[in-house]
Length: 101
Image (tube, rainbow, N blue to C red; front, side, top):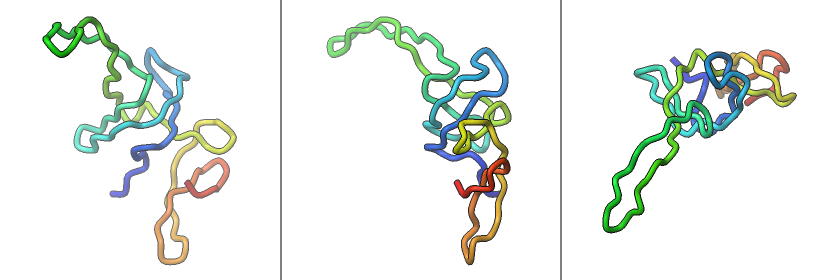
């Protein structure tokens, strides 16, 4: 199955503690159905000080379910993703505007 959401896509969070926030997908794990979005679903990780590193508390983006994400169209609104053939190429398009992504 083709991926509806890919690395580099601008998405909006539909549900959860970060509902309404937008960000860019940093990575996608299709096997678990999750993605890491920059600035969303942040958790604090504690790093022990070492000879080369200061250590302390560092924020880290944690994975979020793909079903809780929607791609942002040209108007800045959440949209669903569809597929169509554009000549010989299969392209993704925004259902709200019909524009190719």
